Length: 369
Image (cartoon, rainbow, N blue to C red; front, side, top):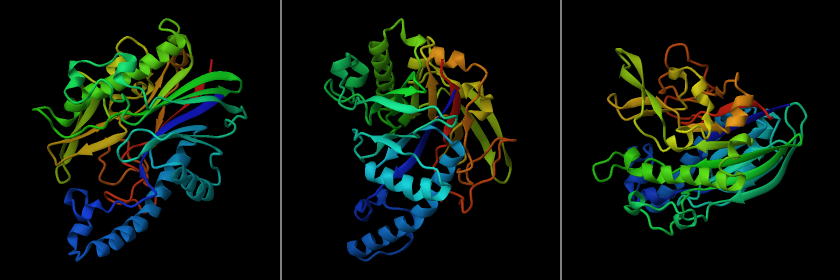
């Protein structure tokens, strides 16, 4: 019996327009900045037209990436609400590819922009095993005080009664062909702006580290510290941090070289340092583990993994010879691929947009013990 499990940050699957760009240029789309807009009413009309025109291509590519992942269970990030999820599933996944997801789960979380994590599940796996939801729990309301995770590092930006998860940790208890499987879907705190002499990643790392500790605590409190490793669980989502990266050095005109390097610290060390869970993407070659291309000019460009499938020790060992897949056909043409990794992009992909997402879906076929 096998299960196809995937995670994908589809980026801003929204059912609303954001008109704040008229008064705040930092939130204004770059194409509108090329034109002189005389009034807020005209700006709203232009913004609506821009978003609607761009969204269809974008969501066709998102759907193609999901279709290529062909997952039985799909963990999603940056979903506006259930209405958005239903409209996308029916209008794109089902209508375009002819195979949608009948089971949909979303709980409103804490994100200030209103973007949530969600889960889509088929009724059966590809080999005919029933997928059943036994229970679903949101941990959005859990505070630092609840799990005794507050410390001096967090006190610089948070209070003890603040919520730990800046979006949510959505916990699902499942039966796959009668076998128990627990799923934890997350979207950790994004890397912010530089603060107090630290770059955006370092300044927000204490929050992500606390989120990772909270996920681990939730799992250990449920199964027991000594017993958790023997259970079948997976932690999936966009964790906005990385333990390694591939520096992309060079320019379009002169060519590129690629250098792999490990990070001195990461919030995700909470999972890996003592073998609590395995990041199965690290089974791939070092230059071929990335799920996102980051660039701020030629002096700051790298490939890194932000999107994860962490498996319990028992589940990882039971699938010891298997590799996860990374779906990169929805990447824009500006993304720089190391040699031998180039893929055929989806139709109408642009230099920067349209695109399926800046993130790549990660999928793995698993046997449950």
